[in-house]
Each structure stands twice: as C-alpha cells, then as structure tokens.
Amino acid sequence: MTAQGYELAVDVRGLRKRYRGLTAVDGIDLGIRRGEVFGLLGPNGAGKSTTVEILQGNRDRDAGEVSVLGSDPGAGTRAWRSRVGIVWQDESATAELTVRDTVRHFARYYPRPRDPEEVIGLVGLEAGADSRIKALSGGRRRRLDLALGVIGGPDLPLLDEPTTGFDPAARRQFWSLIRVLADEGTTIVLTTHYLEEAEALVHRPAVVAKGRIVAEGEPGVLRERYGTEATVAWTEPDGSPRAMRTGTPSRTVADLMGRFGGEVPGLTVARPTLEDVYLRLTGQSQEETP
Image (cartoon, rainbow, N blue to C red; front, side, top):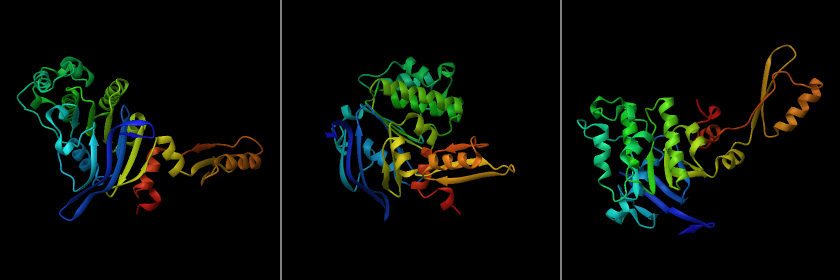
C-alpha cells in the first residue's frame, strides 16, 4: 500500500475499540511509512497502548481495517510475528536467569536474530550481563525489556513508553539505539510522554486525545500550524520585566526597537515548542488548566 508516493508499513482505517461501554479508540486512521520513526503522543487513557496492542495482534478490534507489514495482525502468522518487535510498559522475564542467558534464550525464538552481545551493548547492559534479573534495578530491567524487543531484528518494533523509569543517561543511550535502528531503515512506532524525546527521535508524531488523532505531521509543521503565538519578553527602563504573546513576533520586536531607539534590554523571543503544541491539543495548556 502507498500514500502520497510512500510505501506504508502500517495502514489503519477507521480503527475502533470499546471496553464495557468505554470507547478507547474512536475511528483512528494511520499511515506509517516504511523506514520512519512514528510517534503516538497523548495522555494516559488516550488510546495509545490499545492501538499498539491491536497493531501487534495482541488485541482484537471492534471495527476498522488494519494492515501491518502487509498482513492483518488479527490473522498474523508465526513468520509475521517474528518481524514485529514489542516492548510493553510492563514486561517480565525469568528472575533467576542472567541478562546474557535471557537475551540468548529469546534470540533462539527468531529466524534471523541480532547478535545477543551486540544487543546487550546497544542497551548499555555490558557491565551487568552476568547479573541475575532479580538483582537488577528497575531502570536496568527496562533496558533488558528493550533488548528483548529488538533481539529478533524486527522490521517494525512497537515501543510502548519504553523509557519509563530511565535516568537521563539511560534515556540518551536509548535514543542512540533508536537512531541506529532508524539508520538501518527500520520502521519504529514509539509512544511516549516525554516531549523532548519525541522532538529528538520522531520523524512524524500524531497527537492522540480521547481515542482520536487530533493532529499529525512533522514537528515543525505542528508547531507552525498549532503553535501560532510566540512570547516576546524584554526589560523596561525601570527594570521591570515585561512579556507578551503575539502571532507577529518580528513586528513586535521592530516596534520595541523603535520605542527603545535600538537595542531592547533583556530581549528574548520564545517560539512554541512541540510540548506547547501537545498541551494545547490535549487540553492541558496552562491557560486551560485550573
């Protein structure tokens, strides 16, 4: 399948899922291109994890058409499943095994696995490779979850909040792993609460709220379309700080320069970030929050 000249790894039309009268996914359409890092951004309960579960074939849908790597995940074969990696928010592995033994064991499930030692290095577990899983910290267990999600060399890793519980150094190492996979042409679907992470990694995010996609596009496009106002700040001659939001920051700066006769003390211009856009689209922006 193609869309606007791109071959699609994931093609979803009209996806719906309800739980006991609660609508979790309410008519989602997705077209994820082969080789791109695609982000699903949204608050808890928005429908991100349910969507990922359906893409992986781990949950039935109520309505809609879904194609993942050319197959319906609801009827995915064992060969198809070997091409789709998954990292859930809550993972588990046998506590008595070591990291190295666990990764090697999982590698045997796949026809074309990555080298276990390479994967252990990619997730930063070399120093603890011979530690038993029960002795690992929460953050290091999460690194192991990532290793198990990519050991099969999947064409499409589905990463559901993969860096929850990571310290900043571990999160940066994860970013390096994603860039390695992306450079190899791997299609990646990532859900995350960390907008800095999305800005650093995602080629094209979709913002999900109440089971619907409310915006989708490259980060720069979303900022331009939904983050219409910049904040211009300066210091008055009496030393008091001033700031104003404006859709024409260049004109505002020009007016200030005219008023000050040149340089404007303490001048800063802050344009909307992806986080500003996300908070506005999901109804969590400061002006809308009690």
